[in-house]
Amino acid sequence: MPLSKKRKADAAENKEKFIELGLNKRVSVSEWRGKLLVNLREFYENKSTGELLPGKKGITLNAEQWKILRENMDEIDEWMGMKKEKETEGEESEIKEAEGNEREEDEEAKDGEEEENDE
Image (tube, rainbow, N blue to C red; front, side, top):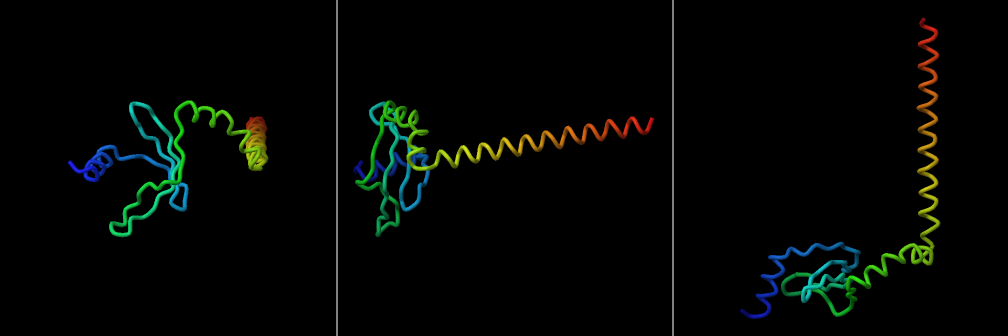
């Protein structure tokens, strides 16, 4: 079987899952020689078929490299100025939760007072 037909058959069989990052960039997980790999890669459009194909630009991480990257995401977020946004979002959600709890307590207290007045 010619290589191109084999690749198409493999791709159809595996139905590769990916996350689109925009501008023809994707993250996917694949298996090669029995090892799982995380691929961050640019794709290009084949002009004759319109199919998106992986380009030369990209990086592949093995499981250990992926683990190290994940363990350092908070630090990278901080470098990107995103940690403050996450903390602010977390604080806002805590405030909303506290306000919701206060409203519930107020409603319960009012219900209790109304029951006492009814008696």
